[in-house]
Length: 329
Image (cartoon, rainbow, N blue to C red; front, side, top):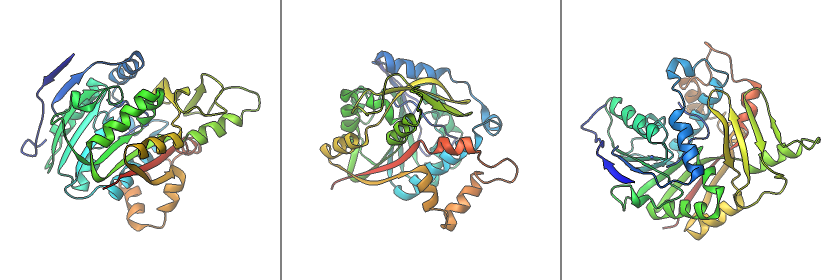
């Protein structure tokens, strides 16, 4: 099915985020040519209940949620700039729209596989006040099909492409990973940057190897990782694990991102690795930067009214990498 429902908005129509979203979807134009695994991901996020702002502030992973939002804000501040055009692959419910607005962008296209999430993102944009950028939303699997099947204009060029906590789904198969890189390269302007947050495959495998009893699962009170097979040697594609995160994701199948393969595919498509830091080290890099510390306070990562991030949340933070590639001019 490939039909358009015009729900686009520009700046004249004025109008929170978790790991492991689904990539795929302001107009909501839908392309439901999904594989079975992609359809399962879409169903999972379409059915996930809304906690609301107050609800999100009173969970076991509130600190983790806020910290991940701070990481994304740091990446957006580092690589976005006033007037830039943005393509957000795996936009989810639009939790990053305010961050992009603060960056002063001029255009935004959000895409996600979960149509319900896309509709919620569009509604969030409508409700934002004093927006200075246009926004369009599309529902599509960003890894199975060319973006131009759904996105309008089909030749849209972004200065920044973002894939937050969702790119691991592309590494289910080589075909999907190559389609993902083709989609990024063909819609990223020369000199533009591709930013993403991904699970750290090396950290996950190292943590698995620490299980001397041979079990394939590990975690703590807030997260659980359960490998379907022996992952002591990371395959380039298709190394699956089930991921659970309290109040967010339950037993969702995900895939290790083999970083050397990711870098190789990016290079084949004209992108060079520019930045790669795990979340713990990224935080350490910014502890002496006044504006970054102030941002921690403004985003309530540090807040006297609630407990600081727990040890179990901090361990879960260590799962992730922040990565950026630059397209050669």
